[in-house]
Length: 252
Image (cartoon, rainbow, N blue to C red):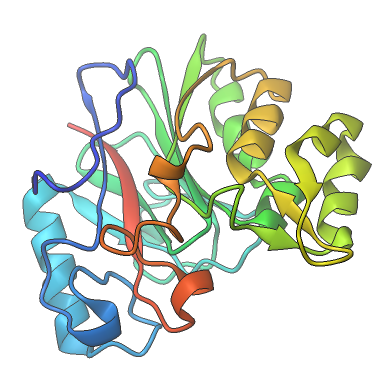
Protein backbone atom coordinates (compact mmCIF):
# COMPACT_ATOMS: atom_id res chain seq x y z
CA UNK A 1 0.00 0.00 0.00
CA UNK A 2 1.00 3.63 -0.45
CA UNK A 3 3.34 4.62 2.37
CA UNK A 4 1.56 7.99 2.59
CA UNK A 5 -1.70 6.33 3.69
CA UNK A 6 -2.56 5.75 7.35
CA UNK A 7 -2.40 2.23 8.76
CA UNK A 8 -4.35 2.03 12.02
CA UNK A 9 -2.36 1.29 15.14
CA UNK A 10 -4.73 -1.00 17.00
CA UNK A 11 -4.50 -4.58 18.29
CA UNK A 12 -6.48 -6.15 15.48
CA UNK A 13 -6.26 -9.93 14.92
CA UNK A 14 -3.74 -11.15 12.36
CA UNK A 15 -6.42 -11.85 9.75
CA UNK A 16 -7.79 -8.29 9.81
CA UNK A 17 -6.38 -5.46 7.71
CA UNK A 18 -7.25 -1.76 7.73
CA UNK A 19 -6.12 1.43 6.04
CA UNK A 20 -7.17 5.05 5.66
CA UNK A 21 -6.22 6.71 2.40
CA UNK A 22 -5.04 10.30 2.04
CA UNK A 23 -5.08 12.62 -0.97
CA UNK A 24 -2.00 10.88 -2.35
CA UNK A 25 -1.75 8.14 -4.95
CA UNK A 26 -4.35 8.94 -7.60
CA UNK A 27 -4.92 10.63 -10.95
CA UNK A 28 -7.57 13.28 -10.23
CA UNK A 29 -6.74 16.94 -10.80
CA UNK A 30 -7.62 20.37 -9.45
CA UNK A 31 -9.80 20.39 -6.34
CA UNK A 32 -9.87 16.60 -6.43
CA UNK A 33 -6.11 16.04 -6.52
CA UNK A 34 -5.22 13.25 -6.44
CA UNK A 35 -6.83 10.12 -4.93
CA UNK A 36 -10.46 11.21 -4.93
CA UNK A 37 -12.64 8.15 -4.36
CA UNK A 38 -16.03 9.91 -4.44
CA UNK A 39 -18.10 9.45 -7.61
CA UNK A 40 -20.72 12.03 -6.55
CA UNK A 41 -18.65 15.20 -6.15
CA UNK A 42 -18.15 16.36 -9.74
CA UNK A 43 -14.84 14.70 -10.54
CA UNK A 44 -14.18 13.05 -13.91
CA UNK A 45 -15.77 9.57 -13.78
CA UNK A 46 -12.75 8.02 -15.50
CA UNK A 47 -10.46 9.47 -12.84
CA UNK A 48 -12.61 8.14 -10.01
CA UNK A 49 -12.73 4.71 -11.65
CA UNK A 50 -8.95 4.65 -11.97
CA UNK A 51 -8.50 5.78 -8.37
CA UNK A 52 -10.84 3.06 -7.12
CA UNK A 53 -9.02 0.51 -9.26
CA UNK A 54 -5.71 1.55 -7.72
CA UNK A 55 -7.19 1.25 -4.25
CA UNK A 56 -8.50 -2.24 -4.93
CA UNK A 57 -5.13 -3.36 -6.28
CA UNK A 58 -3.31 -1.87 -3.31
CA UNK A 59 -5.42 -3.53 -0.62
CA UNK A 60 -5.94 -6.85 -2.39
CA UNK A 61 -9.63 -6.84 -1.53
CA UNK A 62 -12.84 -5.45 -3.00
CA UNK A 63 -13.81 -2.08 -1.49
CA UNK A 64 -17.60 -1.76 -1.32
CA UNK A 65 -18.66 1.90 -1.56
CA UNK A 66 -21.93 2.92 0.05
CA UNK A 67 -24.32 5.72 -0.80
CA UNK A 68 -23.92 7.49 2.52
CA UNK A 69 -27.02 9.42 3.60
CA UNK A 70 -26.12 10.65 7.12
CA UNK A 71 -28.42 8.07 8.65
CA UNK A 72 -28.06 5.00 10.86
CA UNK A 73 -28.60 2.13 8.41
CA UNK A 74 -26.19 -0.82 8.53
CA UNK A 75 -25.86 -3.26 5.63
CA UNK A 76 -24.34 -6.75 5.83
CA UNK A 77 -22.19 -6.99 2.72
CA UNK A 78 -22.09 -10.77 2.62
CA UNK A 79 -25.66 -11.69 3.59
CA UNK A 80 -27.40 -11.92 1.24
CA UNK A 81 -24.83 -11.98 -1.53
CA UNK A 82 -26.77 -9.52 -3.70
CA UNK A 83 -26.07 -6.84 -1.09
CA UNK A 84 -22.46 -6.74 -2.28
CA UNK A 85 -22.78 -3.82 -4.63
CA UNK A 86 -21.63 -0.24 -4.71
CA UNK A 87 -24.23 2.43 -4.08
CA UNK A 88 -26.24 0.70 -1.34
CA UNK A 89 -27.89 3.42 0.78
CA UNK A 90 -26.45 3.00 4.27
CA UNK A 91 -24.01 4.65 6.63
CA UNK A 92 -22.36 1.55 8.01
CA UNK A 93 -21.49 -1.90 6.73
CA UNK A 94 -20.24 -5.16 8.14
CA UNK A 95 -18.81 -8.40 6.76
CA UNK A 96 -17.57 -11.80 7.83
CA UNK A 97 -16.41 -12.98 4.40
CA UNK A 98 -12.78 -12.55 3.40
CA UNK A 99 -11.84 -10.17 0.59
CA UNK A 100 -14.70 -7.69 1.10
CA UNK A 101 -13.55 -4.31 2.40
CA UNK A 102 -16.05 -2.33 4.46
CA UNK A 103 -15.43 1.16 3.11
CA UNK A 104 -16.44 4.60 4.37
CA UNK A 105 -15.77 7.79 2.39
CA UNK A 106 -15.30 11.07 4.23
CA UNK A 107 -14.16 14.66 3.85
CA UNK A 108 -14.71 15.93 7.44
CA UNK A 109 -17.05 13.33 8.94
CA UNK A 110 -15.57 10.68 11.20
CA UNK A 111 -14.85 7.16 9.84
CA UNK A 112 -14.98 4.44 12.50
CA UNK A 113 -13.61 0.92 11.93
CA UNK A 114 -14.45 -2.13 14.05
CA UNK A 115 -13.39 -5.73 14.57
CA UNK A 116 -13.66 -8.34 17.30
CA UNK A 117 -10.77 -10.07 19.03
CA UNK A 118 -11.39 -13.31 17.14
CA UNK A 119 -11.30 -11.63 13.74
CA UNK A 120 -14.68 -13.09 12.82
CA UNK A 121 -16.38 -9.84 11.82
CA UNK A 122 -15.33 -6.39 10.64
CA UNK A 123 -17.39 -3.22 10.23
CA UNK A 124 -17.11 0.43 9.27
CA UNK A 125 -19.35 3.40 10.07
CA UNK A 126 -19.77 6.94 8.77
CA UNK A 127 -20.19 9.23 11.76
CA UNK A 128 -21.14 12.74 10.80
CA UNK A 129 -22.92 14.56 13.58
CA UNK A 130 -26.40 13.50 12.42
CA UNK A 131 -25.53 9.82 12.18
CA UNK A 132 -23.56 9.92 15.41
CA UNK A 133 -26.41 11.59 17.29
CA UNK A 134 -28.89 9.20 15.70
CA UNK A 135 -27.04 6.09 16.84
CA UNK A 136 -25.11 4.78 13.84
CA UNK A 137 -22.29 3.52 16.06
CA UNK A 138 -24.68 1.72 18.38
CA UNK A 139 -26.42 0.11 15.40
CA UNK A 140 -23.07 -1.09 14.09
CA UNK A 141 -22.09 -2.57 17.45
CA UNK A 142 -25.32 -4.59 17.44
CA UNK A 143 -23.95 -6.71 14.59
CA UNK A 144 -21.26 -7.93 16.98
CA UNK A 145 -23.56 -8.25 19.97
CA UNK A 146 -25.89 -10.54 18.02
CA UNK A 147 -23.05 -13.05 17.79
CA UNK A 148 -21.89 -12.63 21.34
CA UNK A 149 -18.49 -11.26 20.39
CA UNK A 150 -16.34 -11.28 23.51
CA UNK A 151 -14.43 -8.07 22.81
CA UNK A 152 -14.85 -5.43 20.12
CA UNK A 153 -12.30 -2.75 19.32
CA UNK A 154 -12.71 0.44 17.31
CA UNK A 155 -10.44 2.87 15.46
CA UNK A 156 -11.33 6.49 14.76
CA UNK A 157 -9.96 8.02 11.57
CA UNK A 158 -9.26 11.65 10.63
CA UNK A 159 -12.13 14.15 10.74
CA UNK A 160 -12.85 17.83 11.28
CA UNK A 161 -11.15 18.77 14.53
CA UNK A 162 -12.59 20.39 17.66
CA UNK A 163 -11.00 23.72 16.81
CA UNK A 164 -12.74 23.83 13.41
CA UNK A 165 -16.13 22.15 13.85
CA UNK A 166 -18.48 25.07 14.49
CA UNK A 167 -22.10 24.02 15.00
CA UNK A 168 -25.40 25.52 16.05
CA UNK A 169 -27.13 25.00 19.40
CA UNK A 170 -29.41 22.35 17.88
CA UNK A 171 -26.43 20.03 17.45
CA UNK A 172 -25.39 20.40 21.08
CA UNK A 173 -28.99 19.86 22.17
CA UNK A 174 -29.31 16.68 20.10
CA UNK A 175 -26.35 15.06 21.85
CA UNK A 176 -27.28 16.28 25.32
CA UNK A 177 -30.80 14.90 24.89
CA UNK A 178 -29.26 11.46 24.56
CA UNK A 179 -26.58 11.87 27.24
CA UNK A 180 -26.10 14.97 29.42
CA UNK A 181 -22.36 14.26 29.67
CA UNK A 182 -22.05 15.17 25.99
CA UNK A 183 -21.96 18.80 27.13
CA UNK A 184 -18.28 18.31 27.97
CA UNK A 185 -17.56 17.85 24.24
CA UNK A 186 -18.66 21.38 23.34
CA UNK A 187 -17.15 24.78 24.03
CA UNK A 188 -18.30 28.25 22.98
CA UNK A 189 -17.21 29.31 19.49
CA UNK A 190 -16.06 32.83 18.63
CA UNK A 191 -19.34 33.43 16.77
CA UNK A 192 -22.22 34.31 19.10
CA UNK A 193 -24.59 31.43 19.72
CA UNK A 194 -22.29 28.88 18.09
CA UNK A 195 -20.36 25.98 19.58
CA UNK A 196 -17.17 24.08 18.75
CA UNK A 197 -17.86 20.34 18.80
CA UNK A 198 -15.34 17.60 19.51
CA UNK A 199 -16.55 14.85 17.17
CA UNK A 200 -13.97 12.20 18.20
CA UNK A 201 -14.75 12.78 21.89
CA UNK A 202 -18.48 12.43 21.22
CA UNK A 203 -17.81 9.17 19.39
CA UNK A 204 -15.71 7.85 22.25
CA UNK A 205 -18.50 8.65 24.70
CA UNK A 206 -21.07 6.84 22.57
CA UNK A 207 -18.80 3.82 22.05
CA UNK A 208 -18.01 3.53 25.74
CA UNK A 209 -21.71 3.67 26.58
CA UNK A 210 -22.23 0.87 24.04
CA UNK A 211 -19.67 -1.28 25.82
CA UNK A 212 -16.67 -0.59 23.57
CA UNK A 213 -13.87 0.42 25.91
CA UNK A 214 -10.98 -0.21 23.51
CA UNK A 215 -10.96 2.78 21.13
CA UNK A 216 -7.88 3.81 19.19
CA UNK A 217 -6.90 6.48 16.68
CA UNK A 218 -8.16 10.06 16.55
CA UNK A 219 -7.72 11.81 19.89
CA UNK A 220 -8.94 15.21 18.72
CA UNK A 221 -5.46 16.67 18.24
CA UNK A 222 -4.51 18.83 15.25
CA UNK A 223 -2.70 15.89 13.63
CA UNK A 224 -6.08 14.29 12.85
CA UNK A 225 -7.90 17.40 11.64
CA UNK A 226 -9.01 17.28 8.00
CA UNK A 227 -9.55 21.05 7.86
CA UNK A 228 -6.07 21.88 9.11
CA UNK A 229 -4.06 19.52 6.89
CA UNK A 230 -4.91 20.43 3.30
CA UNK A 231 -1.94 18.51 1.89
CA UNK A 232 -3.12 15.16 3.29
CA UNK A 233 -6.90 15.30 3.57
CA UNK A 234 -9.93 16.43 1.63
CA UNK A 235 -12.24 18.75 3.56
CA UNK A 236 -15.70 19.87 2.51
CA UNK A 237 -15.85 22.46 5.29
CA UNK A 238 -12.56 24.00 4.16
CA UNK A 239 -12.94 23.83 0.36
CA UNK A 240 -16.65 23.64 -0.43
CA UNK A 241 -16.05 21.42 -3.46
CA UNK A 242 -13.92 18.51 -2.35
CA UNK A 243 -12.90 14.95 -3.08
CA UNK A 244 -13.30 12.07 -0.65
CA UNK A 245 -10.77 9.84 1.07
CA UNK A 246 -11.71 6.51 2.61
CA UNK A 247 -11.19 4.23 5.60
CA UNK A 248 -11.40 0.48 4.99
CA UNK A 249 -11.31 -2.72 7.03
CA UNK A 250 -11.36 -6.29 5.70
CA UNK A 251 -10.47 -9.89 6.43
CA UNK A 252 -7.80 -11.94 4.69
